[in-house]
Length: 339
Image 1 (cartoon, rainbow, N blue to C red):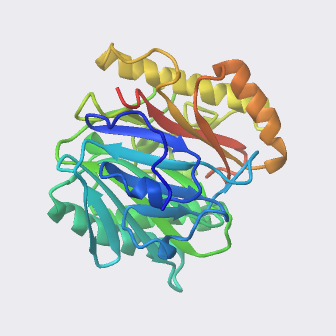
Image 2 (image 1 turned 45 degrees about the horizontal axis):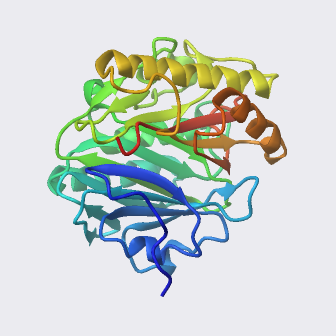
């Protein structure tokens, strides 16, 4: 059996690292591991690893054949379990959970409604009822026209499954097109025993207040979330080139990326108004995922990121579709990791 990778000491509550390893087994062998994520075709499938903490994400890495594994480590000890189709792990303060739901004949609306209803029932009885962060991945996110677009249908189904939505307690979230051709909705989350504080971006209209032109049901998420413990990082939602509620720079990837990074800086400013100890800029304590629509743009985006952020910010670039057709790039992440 391979030895565990060389990682910093276990955190007091939650740390996130991108780790190159021959497989997830050694990472899962550490008692403080809350979750491990593998990306692309070179990472093993979820079913091949008999551990609820491991999840294969169907997004291909860009600029490298094998992406690093994403590892969440907590204070431990970590316990694991299964509840029907839901797999989970928890450490007494935080919970990781995942549900993968095949789309029925009714499509993504029915899949999201049923999946979120199952998850809502689980959350209420789990002892970790406060959602901090949710990730949603499903194929062909912008397929369909008008209100029949799959992302708009997903938003309708999500609220049908959740029931009433309190905008004061919305988690940070990401919804991304997986481009894998499989009609499976993959949802994973981070939850806690205590509530966090949702944050909005002063440069943007809150997603849950979008006008009707974006669909019959506005998206249900906060732009970022400050967790209940200062030893858990700031959680940044999927962020793109949107000012107000309108997409910007449809004809320029470079301008879109600059606008996206400006929005992330704005979110850090909103967080620092509540938690001044947070670093004012993305830095070595940040972890970013960059979702890019066109693989041919990977080198240009990498160069622009390094010019704007330097080489100290760890990021992972993945081939994926953003939820608006005119948007070419989206970034999400965490900040203050392992603080």
